[in-house]
Figure 1 (cartoon, rainbow, N blue to C red):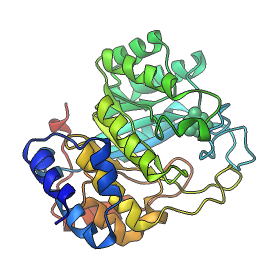
Figure 2 (tube, rainbow, N blue to C red; figure 1 turned 180 degrees about the horizontal axis):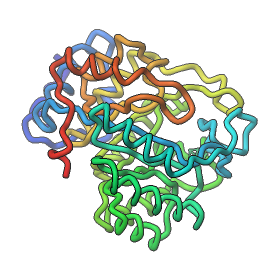
Figure 3 (cartoon, rainbow, N blue to C red; figure 1 turned 60 degrees about the vertical axis):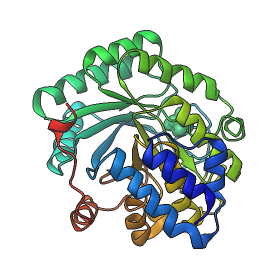
Figure 4 (cartoon, rainbow, N blue to C red; figure 1 turned 90 degrees about the vertical axis):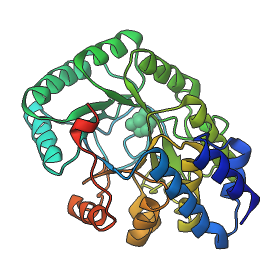
Length: 331
Ligand code: SF4
């Protein structure tokens, strides 16, 4: 057994203290033959510190495409020649999407908009949408609307938005290589305000952007410092028209090693499979991740690409004897 896994067994599994940057790097550079033991340990950590429940979430985009920012991985940027154009969703469709999400057993419904930050038009739509969903559907409401001002943070908290998603996306040292229209620190400021306002913090990123293994470890450690309630892990799905269109998809074993390493850095967080897992891992990998540290999934369609049908994920959870987290456990 590699020394780093012995150390992680004592420190992370035993004491619930996540690995630091050096420890994560050691895990990320373990040879392939140690991958099964690494995933097994990450799974034990998840079961010990989070339990067997899996949190299921649906997402809906109220404003898709046409974003003024230049995140190089994102097909919703209006800066590149990608095929996604700006589209707005109306309130009845939003409520309908929340109802369909709740019908799958999901406890989380996240309202997403492709914007730098919300303007008054978007805030008004979210205000109306959240009120309509709360009146008709029994589900937790989360939001992901970009960078916020203090008054917007306060307003979202007052509306009853219980969790806010804002991804740091990648290591601080690599961020300027993939985003030039705003800074990592600006994103951090929004997360700090969200935390201070009492909303749960959801913050993750995308692996496979061209970051080095050391930067992947740096990112895990930075998330460890932030201490988010949830970390969505995306894998780059190169989108046509974006600057990263020709980048190779992350190797499946590297992706699984990263899942386990992030779990060992963040023993108590909700670690969610988000976009890109199908193209990176395939069906078999989805199962390996759920047995290697992942304890949350997004059902149905992702924002601009087609995910697996909800029924497939739910059947897999059933087979793995991992109950879907109940709403009563989260309220
Ligand atoms: S801010 Fe968000 S929606 Fe806009 S380009 Fe960046 S990742 Fe895409």
